[in-house]
Structure formats: C-alpha cells, structure tokens
Length: 281
Image (tube, rainbow, N blue to C red; front, side, top):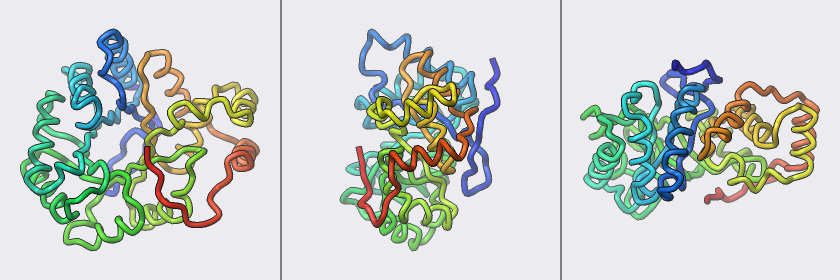
C-alpha cells in the first residue's frame, strides 16, 4: 500500500516531510506487544505518517531494533530519525553511536541524526562527528533535541553550525514555554521545530475543556491536542503502540481547528507570560 497524502512541514533545505510522524519511546521493550507495535508502525507508514523517530537510548537499542524489523523492505518510504546520547557525543563517539544505530535499524543511512540533549562534550565535538557522518553518506541532515535559545545561538555561531535542521523539544498544550522565545527564534532562523510527547504521554486527555472542544468537532481529545501542535507550525511525533491508536492519531492531520476552538484552548492552557526554562521529559 502506498502512503496516503498527509500534512507536511518544510526542513531548512526545502524538503517536505510529514508533519505528523511516529515516536517510539518505550516501544520494543515488551515481547508480548512486539507484533502489535510492528503492525502499528507499518500502518502509520501506510497512512502517511512517514517520519519515524527513535533513539539509541530507547530500551538500550530495543526500539531501534523494532523499527528495523518493522521497516524491512520499506526503508525508502520513511524519513528515519535517531539520536546520539550526550555521553557518546564527542567526534568519534558520535560516529560510533550512529553506526550502532544503523546496525540495529538495518539501514545504511539516517535521514536525520540528533544530539539527544546537551552533555559534557563541547558542541564543536558533536558537530565534527555529524560532519564526518554526512561526508560518509551515513546521515542526510543533523539536528538537536532539548536545546534552548542560548544553546542554539551558541551552536549556530560555530563554523557549520547554521546547518542545524531541527530542534526537537517537549511541546504540547500544557508545555507552551517555547512560545516565548525558542519557537520565534526557530522560525526566524529557519530551523524546524519538532514536538515530542505532544499529548503529554496521555496526561492531557482528561482535561474538561479539551474533551469539550473534541466533542464539538466530532473528534477525540488526542486528535485535537495533536491538531493544535500542527496548527502552530510544529511537527509532532506521538508514540503509537497499536493500530487503533495510529488511526486515531492520523485523524489529527485532517482536523482544522476553528478560531473558537483555539480561543477555548488558550483559555484553558495559557500561553507563557514570560521566559520559561526549557522543559524536558
């Protein structure tokens, strides 16, 4: 089955990727759920959710192995993302970590490789590793995760640092701090913002206002929460462990939130009134 058309978002290069993708945090850790999780990932690709995000940290590589199995024979249908742990992120360690991820993913290249968060290694070291990987054809783009404005300014001032493609951060209706300065900075710099935990790992879904907006739109709270992230011009990578959940998530890409819904959500989930430290999960 070919992937359905889905809402897209542009990378700095101009390449369009699916705005609604699939996360894999906690996947691959329960053998009893493996068949269902693989089916979910495969269905997501069928439905156009072709950004698949994983990391060497997730299950100590178990999520990458699951993704590799799910995408066997379908690698060219997806935009594949993984991440290097900060402790591995010196120049040689970044290259070695990527090669380990590629082995687990059964892939020859990543489309996007991220520094998972900032650690003890200077950004210059990680950037040198990314450069080596790009020159070797093992990654197409590189980016970061969990970096705030000051970090991004420092990064982009380095030689070659302005090639950063993505900043992947915690962002959802209940975590709006990036709207004060990081999200405007990304827009100005042309860096694509990508939201992890876009429904706050399910904790958002029982909020009365969100449920009421969903009822009015004949949608689910999950779909409204995801559609809200997409409406901010931010990509989203919700985790989907079952085919039914994947189908529900996919509906968000077709949901346009009217002004009255956006106003109700703003009233229930206030935007930041000042600078807020970058939040992480």
